[in-house]
Length: 306
Image 1 (cartoon, rainbow, N blue to C red):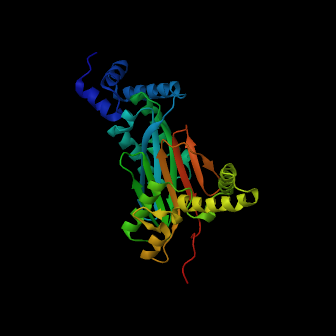
Image 2: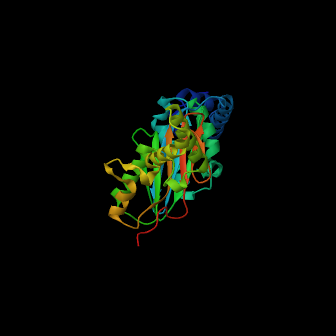
Image 3: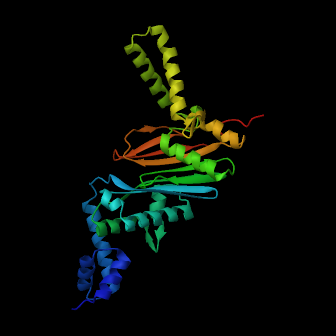
């Protein structure tokens, strides 16, 4: 039977599938549009199962904040070519908007939510067939705080969401979000660094001092000094402020509002391989190429000045 170009274009618009895939689906469905849509979706599920063992090392990281809530997602694919595709980015944004509207508890709950009547999990599988690459929702994180801000670094490979204990100047919030993106802290303050990371850093400090020939009775003191340096470099509030290295992020924030503090943050960055995991602060690695730094904090991290 003859398939009109307008019908092919309509199906392509509805599914984002290739022109020939749309035409073949319409032929198989004998011109029935709904059946053709189902054919393309089923093809996506078949392709997704065949590519399940492939690595999705590229992708798109997006974040958004609105009022007292912020969310972040990373949708991964196999190639940078797909990651930069406008349709792929728009699909990621649809998932992000759904997450913001519903604030699901975790990634599995997000995958179960519906967009236009179909679950996100099913749509990801269908898009795998359309695009021809493995797609996976690599990460979802959320922040709930009195004030929030999101930052997406150009290129959609890195994003942050920051939560504050109160509303703040927009530039201050953005500066802190960009600081986290640039310096990748492991926690907000030194008291929030997990015990296993502290122990690991102390052990490294001792080993370095031992290799340098330092006396055994001095190793603990030397390691503690190096740990303090680690806190300065790896905890958000104690890091040197990138715009003015002579002051810390904490002093920068307090110079604008003495009662202002960071209460939580999320950071996602692709092509990151370090893995740390502990209660309160986690660096998670997916397929060796993606990390999320998660630091939920329920109380302010430093006391309000008297």
